[in-house]
Image (cartoon, rainbow, N blue to C red):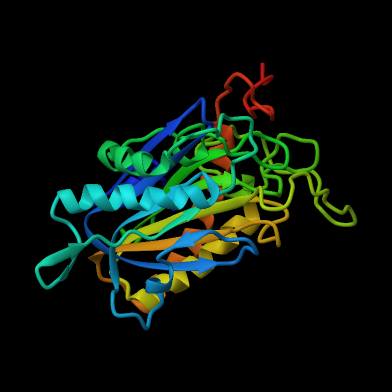
Length: 327
C-alpha cells in the first residue's frame, strides 16, 4: 500500500472534510460530507459511546446511505452539531426524499472534552453553529492536529487531536481514515516518544522515531483520565462499492487499528467508535473486501499517530505536545 496524493481521507474521491471550533472553548466539530449520498455503517466497541442516528446504520434498516458524518467534541452537547449540518444540507436541497420533504441523514459521535481547561460557560449550545460552519468549510484539504473535533482532545500522556491518512491498494481501490483521538490509553510506548503505530508508518508521516523498544506485559497501565473523559471516534472510507453489511465489516476490522495504535483500547471508559463510508465508485471482489479490512485498520493506526504528531500548543494546555522538545 502507498499513500494517496494528499495522505488524507479525501483521497477517496467525492469526499470533503471541514472543521469548526473555538480555541477559547477548547472544542470543536469535524464533518465528513459526500458530493452525493454514500453507504455508511458503524462499529462501537467502547464502553461509553455518545452517538446520534447510529441505529439507522444497521444492515437491516430501510435507509442504506447518508449525506454526512459528524465527529464532535462537547460530550452530549456536541451531538447538536449534526443539527447544524442538517440545516446546511437542507438549504442545499440535500436529503432523503419523503414525499415533498427532504431529510438530510447525518449520524454523529462525540468525545468528552468538557474538563480540558476551556471556557464552557456558554449560554447557548455552540455546537449547532459549529456543525453548519464545518459543513461550509468542507474541502479536499484540511488541518490535522489541534483542529475541529480535536481542538481539546487529550490522551494518557500527550495532547490529542485530529488525524487522517490514506492508502491506495494495488487494485486501485483507495482507503482513507479520519479520527479524533481523545483516549484513556497511550499512543506511545512507556515513557518513550515511539508510537505504537510505528510498524505501519509510511514516509516518515509521524516523525519516523522508530519502533517501540518496550512492550506492555507485566506492567498494568494507570488510569490517568477520569470516568467519561475519553473516546477515540473515527471514520474509515473507501471508493469501493459495498453493501451496508460489507461496510460494517470494514468498520469492525478497522477497530483493530485503534487497538494497534492505542494501549489500552476499547476500555469501559472509552466510547471507541468507527464509522465506515463507501462511495461505490469501484466494483470489488471478495478478495478485495478482505484487503479492505486490513487496509482500513492499518490506515486508521497511521491516522491516530498523525493526530498526536500534528498537535500544536495553545496557552493553558494541560498536556505536553508531542513535537515539543524534539530539538
